[in-house]
Amino acid sequence: MTPHHATPSVYFDNAATTPLDPEVLDAMLPFLKEHFGNPSSIHGHGRKVRAAIENARKTIAHLIGAAPAEISFTSGGTEADNYAAFGSIRTLGLKHAITSKLEHHAVLHTLEALEKLGEIELSFVRFDEQGKLDLEHLDELLGTHTRSFVSLMHANNEIGNLNDIEAIGQLCRQHGAIFHTDTVQTMGHYRHDVRQLQNHFLVGSAHKFHGPKGSGFLYTASGLQVQPLIHGGAQERNVRAGTENVYGIVGLAKALEIAYRDMAEHQRYIQGLKDRFIEKLRAEIEDVQFNGLSADAEQSLYTVLSVSLPPSEFNEMLLFNLDINRVSASGGSACTSGSNIGSHVLTALGCDPQRGAVRFSMSKYNTAEEVDYAVEQLAKMYRPQIARMH
Ligand code: PLP
Image (cartoon, rainbow, N blue to C red; front, side, top):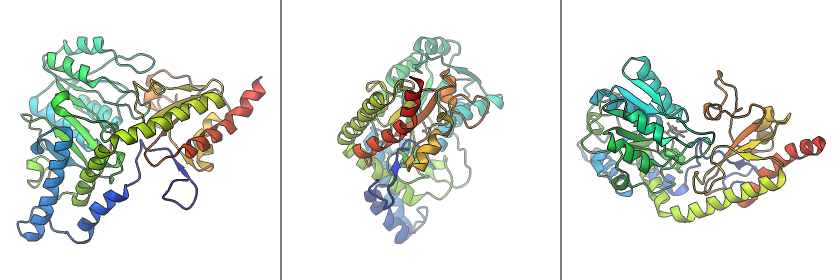
């Protein structure tokens, strides 16, 4: 059912990755076919490619209100998160970090690694049963150390909750803390302006907004110089050595440009799909619920809907059954704490182990028909069960 494939199939896993936009591919192709020079070479072949990288840097900087020198290219969101954490903690000698158990593993495991190395003390901000962060607790935690590193995401990749990063940033400024926000799920979906946010770090990953995989960036506020994690040549101002992923960088900038250009239209369209999903699920499945703030249009990412399904024999095979019916979604059983297959986010929220969980995440390429089809597949599983119970 997606426009790209002959075999009907429905892709609702856009928070995991998105299909490449053909316009992005067109921008990348000359750098795969013709312009092969090494950007560090000073001859014509190299200069041509260097210019493309610096143009991409300028494009991204302009879109987020930064200076080009504040943008470093990385292999994606995970590496950028690692740079923000390792880089600033080590460079500034910070001894305390604050995050939440709802963060992506790219942040959580990175800070846990620093804690294990004995470099920091790690604190976790409390949140309520819907995953709303307790900012009074954050204020308290910030008061325990002279200067902390704070990493709290803009939007949660599993439940879609949007955190108030302006308010968090303000608290961090009051306490002189360094503030990193993982914007992997919102970059290209919301307008970010670092002049307004005034945070220290921000990240983007191209494959989450119809760009290529393996290409991302880190924004580092001027005045902060992070230490390299990868040592070698002088690329990326000595911070990130290695020959640049040229076509990835070109694709990243093009994808972000398109995302900003069409943002209002796509936001309206995708929010419409999400509203339809919620409405149809409520009509078709008794006792359907939504995890976190997922069903709240004001407080959640418009691309993500995290569905909580009633206790059923189908819950264990939920994603498998959807897959058999050609619907790609994700989720992971909710309460399998101690195992790697469960969702650490749903587990941290204290979810009901009897209920099923599935995340549908949408993009500009999805259609209303696909929403109806996916709901119908779920209804086929859950309708007879409900009927039997009555
Ligand atoms: N942070 C968040 C919130 C994410 O959703 C993801 C990807 O799923 C990442 C970080 C990691 O990004 P990447 O796949 O580019 O390494």
